[in-house]
Image (cartoon, rainbow, N blue to C red; front, side, top):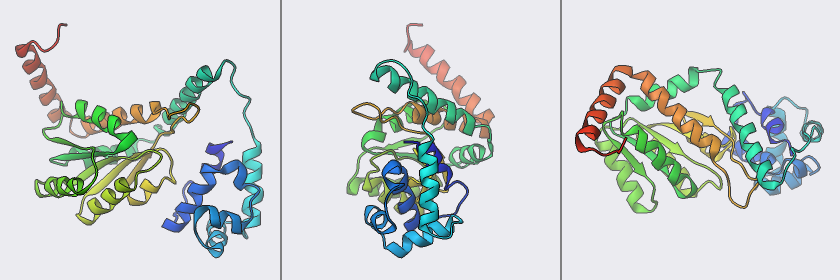
Length: 274
């Protein structure tokens, strides 16, 4: 399945929430969707059939049949599979994801805007539930060396709402949200609540048509590997460190000062052996 080609059909198009749901379904089921009727796509995306028709017209097609023909063209352009066993192929696929991420970073404007939003938030809440929790913790571990107050939100329930409200009351103006498949409902609810509270949101997610993109002021994407039993998050992890670099670039003097203070502290306490 050529996911990247399908995603390219939606690039630069302003989609409504319903249209995002349709686009996401087409990405997730690209090979099959290229042969489905409008009614079947509607059932897959849990929307009405007229919504599918309007979606196709929003992309510039006369109707869904024209979009389906384009989907068939895109999904038929297969790439020869890399050699080696399934483990090697999964790792090589991650290398391809990193290559695509590197290409995306040629345009640094959105990344710089994300860095500026996050650098100015005191404290900085970092949302990551379920599969995204380790990545949120990884980001926060390093971010705490250059920011005075980083708060990881890695558990759901009513306590998540409490911690969001506490961060806002303490002065937070932005939140970093890491939302990866299978897109926990609580993550989307938390993003919605953060927006209602006036927080700007930068999201790290896997696709421009991810449900998380609907609630983000800036959505930064990196593909998730799905070749093994469990997903590989190599590219999203790399992107998280790129975002942290953008935060440092947005306030270089503050970042340098805090890094020097950190080094003095760990040397005094002999935290590391080298």
